[in-house]
Length: 114
Length: 112
Image 1 (cartoon, rainbow over the protein chains, first blue to last red):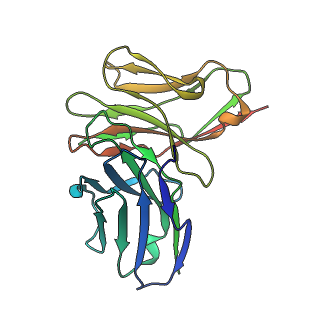
Image 2 (image 1 turned 90 degrees about the vertical axis):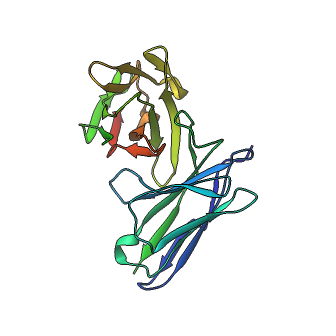
Image 3 (image 1 turned 135 degrees about the vertical axis):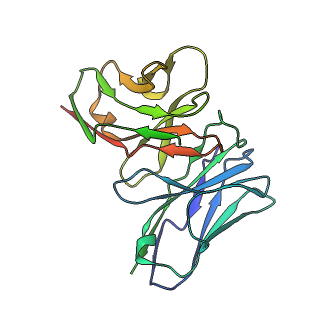
């Protein structure tokens, strides 16, 4: 079975631009979460979606938004990019949002903002 | 507030020796604990988790972790290290809002 897939793998943008990152979960998984990982740090939670509904939001500004589609794939949008948005963006999927659920991660999208 | 601490930025072990990567946590309620590994320029790979039951959890690639409630620790262990185990290891705990709270990571270096 295919794992979590993310596109694109790398992206270069300039300050003020907008970016859309995409994620396809493992087949059968209905929950998708997004994380930001800055070099040298652990991931920081951005969003979680389950059955197309937002189930959680981390401490990120409103420039960050996401959605989940009927096929459970997801998009993360970041507007008005700042230099500090440069990071590895990770998508994870799980069957559901429960506390014991294991999240499986994609390879990430590396975003560089110049 | 829930938190995770990985007190060692880096752990160096000779190949064939046992390894331990430390993790301590702070949660309200029952802890749900996870270990992941990250290879360079790769996403995170799940190793093992503790939900309830036996304090010794066995996971992928020969790794195991020992849950200690009194010490609020969840240390990752392996009896005999391989050079290929060299990577970045993250401990995480599920918070009351069902989100994963992550440690800063520990770089594991296995020397031949």
